[in-house]
Each structure stands twice: as C-alpha cells, then as structure tokens.
Length: 81
Image (cartoon, rainbow, N blue to C red; front, side, top):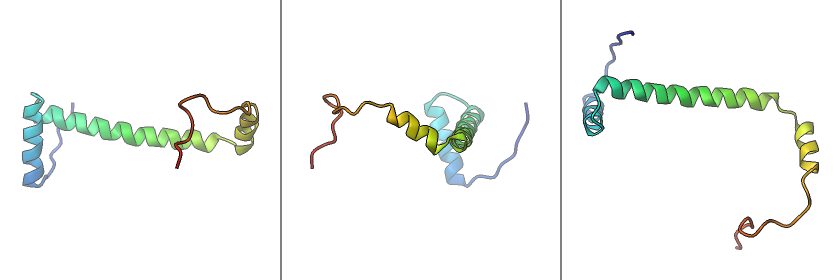
C-alpha cells in the first residue's frame, strides 16, 4: 500500500469528511473508492475507443442488411410528435 499526500481546498476536504461519515467509512476509504471509480470510467472509455477503432463500416452495413424489414414491436415505436 502507498501513502499519498494531496492538497485539497478546505471546502472539498470538509465535504469529503461529511460524505465519508454519512457512509460510515473512513476518509481514506472514501478517497480510494473515488479514485477507483474515476479509473474505471477512464479505462472503460479507453477500452470502448479501442474496440470502436477496430470496427469496419462495411461489416456494420453487412450485418444491418441481415435485419428484417418489419415494423417495430408494440412499445418500440418512435414517440409521435
């Protein structure tokens, strides 16, 4: 485990303390969880961009051509204007 010193505005620090207390966890746990959530969001976006870059429009159009030309099922219609 590593130690990290960060500088926070007093208002941010106070809010973190209040939210951690509300969840009955330590400030350390709160910040570690917040950092992990941010990492997951960034890494997910990186993953999706990488996967999207592998896609080919021709493959998508070929797959789309396989879809039947049928009216939408009840409840799947566009809302009327």
